[in-house]
Length: 329
Image (cartoon, rainbow, N blue to C red):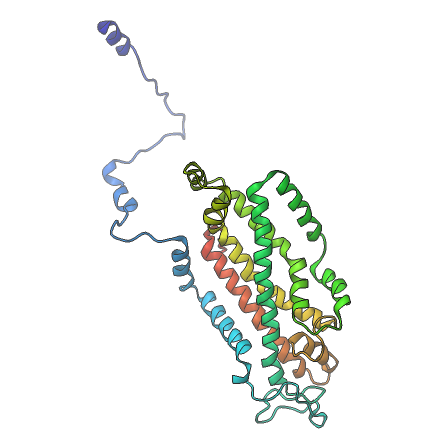
């Protein structure tokens, strides 16, 4: 049997057809391909996480540095407005109506004789507070809905997805206008925050659902289940932490849009009342002076634009750091 098997093996031939013209292949000698130097890994360097790599990328990104500085300045102004403006924003004198700037009042006065600089500084607190609180509530509520829908699937996903589609069909500003008509006498900031949350959680839910659907099929979830981990433990301990990257990007970029939404509602006169200092209210009041004294309209508009631009640039930089495949340059 050994001799016959050896004869059979000797009769086996491997046939390599001759390449056609233009199909020749060249294989470089091993000595000429320094793969070890290219693929070598420095074992002395400690391993880093995705977040550490993202932070290393962010701190080298000029776009992130500029946007972070602007955002920090805006937040400091919103937290401590009295450090930047000594004048009372509600102290108005009609004798100063539409007066130009002078020492102590660099931006001049609006139509009611109020100090424009002081109102711009104090208006940051209202606009930024509404934007941050709305972003937090939208992230928590929308993220929870999306995580449950993506993780459990089946009829749970079908029901929550249809509810999401219903709210997605309602424009946020239009829905807020209709709802806020019932609370026009309220001066609370929470009416704006809750209204924007009610119509703004949809995009966050869809983003979280997609991230959870991708993460739950990875090997670490299967391994955790095999070791006896419960589904809820897998969701909150393993899947959600590995789905945070798109959620953080979405939250950062949405913050600016909520500030704009509050300013839009206040501009239309159905958001915050005139007794509350806000950029949207000041822009609405100053629109009648656009042709005669545009500087009164320019300053709150510029503050709103710079704030929104800072958070949008920060979100774009965070997106590039957490998702290198989405980089445009």
